[in-house]
Image (cartoon, rainbow, N blue to C red; front, side, top):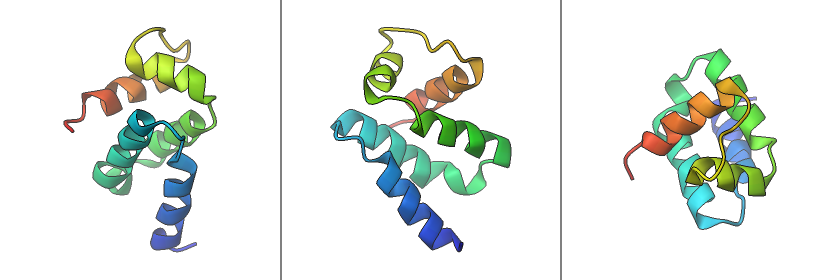
Length: 82
């Protein structure tokens, strides 16, 4: 699959119905996905498989994610300037 098609599919998967999560995931795709190593991309794809309510609590800091790799990426995405 070419990069443009892959990015379109990822954007669709990033749509969560919560503006804050949509913006966070969109920011990652726009600023980091293209340069991210395969290992980080795999972690991001795992993050997209998580339930929205968990993602919300993790990104807003109400709970810590039990997975260290996911938590590291959550912190990196959350630290990206708006």
